[in-house]
Length: 403
Image (cartoon, rainbow, N blue to C red; front, side, top):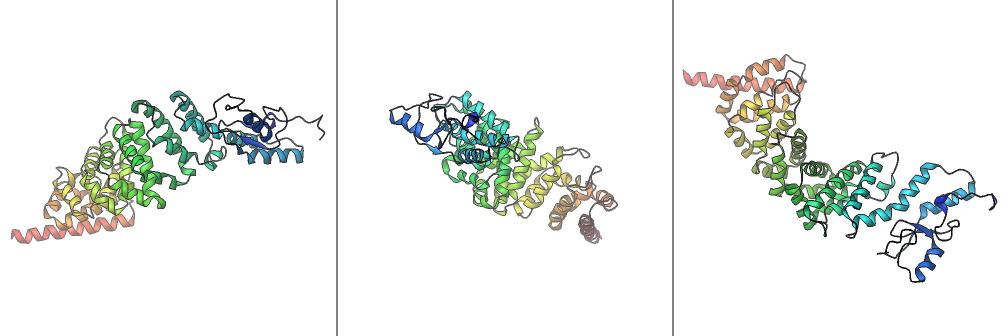
């Protein structure tokens, strides 16, 4: 391909020399130049970006290897460049500017919100496109700017930024390194995390609950999960979401976060102490028998917590504790939660005559017989037979004492 006939793609042209980029380098503004051209510009005492005229807070230049490789490929082949590659290079070239504007205290809130809109739109096309967001660890970047307690912004103003940033971060989460969340081990970031739970709006709290779920499930974040379980304020805020009657999604986020945290045995006692069992029992009590609800998940959590004596006492002292479990033994719509409900009753009734009597008076025998005639799993039926046998033995004992 002769120079006279060569049509250079605009992306390959240096904005200063207007010639082909031979050694492309990128400034903190995200603009790319030929090394020799930008070095002459800076050597002349200029402290701004030639294209944007932004002041260079970081005068360093970074080699743009992706663009250089693409230019070499273009020169060698002389063929049309795949537009997908151009999109990746565009993303790679502008990443420094996005990072700079997100982190800079000089960027306006509106500017940061616009950048988050761009990130959100790009994240919608993952994982097939815009993988540069993952390669450049934007998940970690977003967490850093969210939990640094931004200076220069009032807390209420910063909530708008936090809300959008968390939504974008959660979109990147499935494709990112979960270890980045361990930054919350830092006391200042952890304190701000809890503060956002306490003072944030409902959307922020739901996003934070999703992060809690991820932390509890990740093998690389076990220590952080333990730290979450030791924070009384944090647990209280999550538990309070369960009682949210105005927004089902908030209660769902809270229950899922509690479920994730309760999977770690060391967290269970603190969950009981902060009122998790009471709130879950209230949720179960208010759920309608034939509607799809989070009651099955709630009773599954209770089953886990019943390994603790203090959790048993909460159920026994709750005015509708045993009754709420009985109503989940058999559900017309499905049998989700039946096994956990039966097993929970087994645990409670085994040591308590009062609980056995209350379960019988609440109609558990009929529920168990219906369950045994249903299409539930064999494991659930085995548990149901065990509970029937237990209640029958309790009944026989009472009959003998009566004689």
